[in-house]
Image (cartoon, protein in one colour):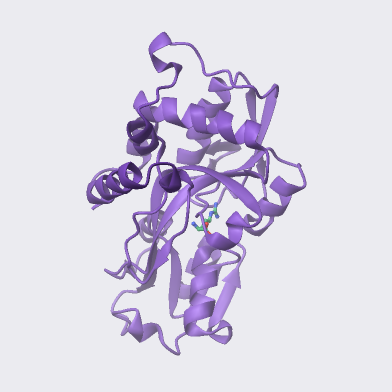
Length: 283
Ligand code: ARG
């Protein structure tokens, strides 16, 4: 499926050239999207190359010696904590980007809901948190190329009578505050039916305790939570297919270009695939 999407995105990129390069949108209700360009696709489409062949670090124009990432480290396998250490796909990709920029990465852990504000207030240089590119967020921040795909999934108790998206009608749904799961569920099933938790894990605890009937959250964290807890199941349905990207302050094209150049290089040399493969095993 992923491969199919990539091929479609590549074709789209080729046809639309520059028009297709703007990272954009997510689609709902299993409507698969071809929008959003990955660094590799963009590269293939433009025929440009980074300095990968020289072996030199990208060393962008950004003068930052320390680069601050705002995240919400409660979202395995993208960002979570092992003891005091931050680990996960986003953490490792961010470290590789910082290295390309010749800067040291500093991670600032916060509520997911605060990341965009924090980016815009300059408290952090970028936000990276399995963050979906949406039209609404594009009004507030700029997004880099997409480096991963996410799917909004539904977690229920084993043996639940909820078998499809339609069955969620009138049911109590738990989400993480401010996420696309929150936004879509509130739109589709009514805010009165949606309970918002600070962390996805807390929504899962509420599901186990019978406070909600289902949890809507990104597929990889969903798998991680189901693996850690007995008696849960993920519905075989794709509520929404999304592109994850890094958010920078609107208009900070210098940093945006630097991160994009680093992403291109790290995509081409296989670093990003290797990091994702380390945390997400092929089924
Ligand atoms: N992809 C979803 C969104 O962008 C959820 C991201 C939640 N990430 C996190 N680190 N808690 O809204």
